[in-house]
Length: 318
Length: 256
Image 1 (cartoon, chains in turn orange, red):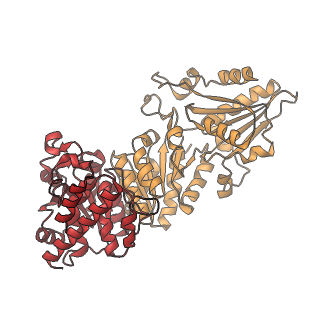
Image 2: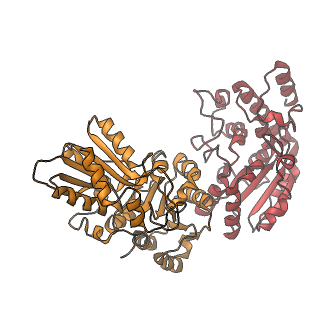
Image 3: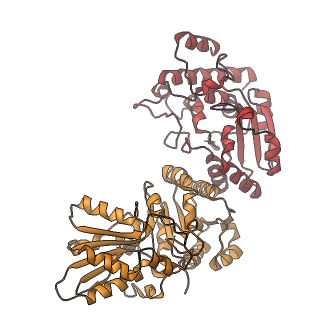
């Protein structure tokens, strides 16, 4: 299955062939889709070396001269150039698109330095930034159009890989800028049929598959469960939820982040600001850096995000 | 403009900087005074290449950026009355210049970033971009990341100027944390390097009227607090603004 990164870069490449103002800067990161770009559009490509600070500053300057600039590196390194993103982009009003590959525990077993598990907290603090976490390639592809057609400061969080079943999401939907502007979608509503409590699970990216699994188990136990794909992390928009009048007994946020400032916090803020008094359960990674060995599935399971543990946390809260 | 006149302009620019800084009691006065002659050479001397209407001046050394305010007033980017409103709610001029001020192009205040930004702007726009760095700013690693990049891509429409007043906040750079041999460092990165007396208009004219195929660094040797005798080369004046009437009077006499 094509990765989100390659889907994005290969589609951006098609746009770049027609738009000489599009530039891609790689901070010493390769990709199969990038090889073609480097060969055919070398004048629209920069190898910045391992230098995140200069890459962002140079990108900001290019943007100030009217170019559409994309900076591609591992998502964990946004912390290394946070000041440059804040200062040269957010503060100075320069629109660039930051492509961060492999969010959450995607780079296991590389250890916590490679696994950004708090990036949402610090990146969402930047004034005016938009943050996206696509769950599949259909949404990823449309982000290319959005970033080309409506330049803004954006951080796009790619999953290094994602469960194949998520590719079938939105097959019947029109994925366009209106879709992206919705910010989130209810992807599933399981009717337990017994009038038991109703639950809404808000999640994004890789964990969406796990949330769907959880919803089926809870449905079999008689609960009504909605699953929401929050593909835009900032600004958080839960417009579709209003159709359901936020009428859930429990709203659950499920994220591959520590809970100090993840999107669970954003959802709580939105609910508070909207005047909705609902029980909220935030589920995420423990407040620690994870040094254990194991693949992503293993580490999720051993760090409080197994399907069973998620189900238990939810039902015990009801 | 004749050299003699440039000296008079520089004195006038320094006097106005001294006036608005002491009025507002807002710091970095000495850092502003050191780079005045370089700016006067670029903006007022018709024999130097810099054209303020076409070219771009970026202050990476943001705390020195108020030194350009009197110049922007002279060239009518801003109203002269703005100098009197410096750092007040009624005025547009701030301690660090930013892109909201006519004639200014970048946010000031975070060191080490203006050089990479200027490289992108120069590359993308094709304009001649001049970027002013402080020497103590060279401790920032981001500067050296950018130097590698600029040299490799031969971005020779970018003019890097180092205001080498040889001081940081705590004292002399060579005593606190050595920067020398600075010229060799830039050369080894692939730059053409010119070291000049940053207060000598003939030297400055010679450097800034010379075309260069390679990217260039101009190291302008300057004196922190230049023009006010009791401030010159006294590191404590990085943060101190003269308040006593006698000190202000002395400075104004020296700058008149």
